[in-house]
Image 1 (cartoon, rainbow, N blue to C red):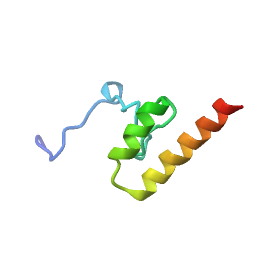
Image 2: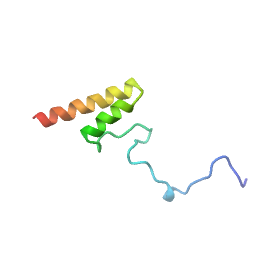
Image 3: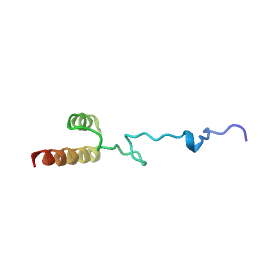
Image 4: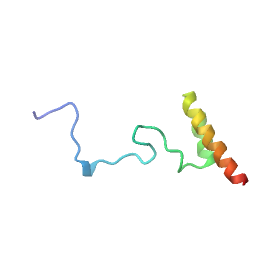
Length: 65
């Protein structure tokens, strides 16, 4: 039982990526409009592009008010 396929990591040593949610979706909150535009251009999936576009539109609406 010495060597497994993956090494076990102590929970205290585990660190999540702050730019991703638990299930791997990107967090859009900490990004600014320029970063969101770049991310939308790089993203291959239409589903994610729509999500980013909605976030951009929401932020532009907040700035206009």
